[in-house]
Length: 114
Image (cartoon, one colour):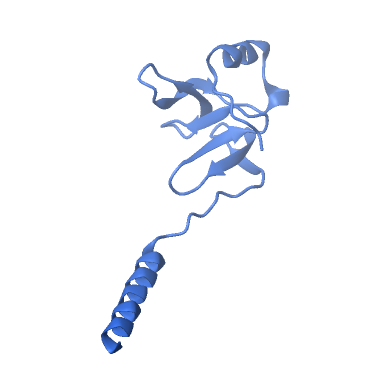
């Protein structure tokens, strides 16, 4: 009987130890963020996801990605399925031009705003 109790205690300790080592996912900040573009413009955006999977998007739901120059640009999906920053610099909805809106409808990636 003593061996059975020792075995149960050992298994419980191992299980609790393994569970304690699993990191908890931390969600991204849920509020609006003001991002300063290198040219001085400001862009309001949301962060979504956690430390394993995350992305940024405009307030009206277009996915954006930072390019090498530090600008937030609209995201575009390549033929191989990867998501990259396009050449179109992102703007707030009120500051967009018609050609930018047309481009988004053709090539932009829309995310659900929640």
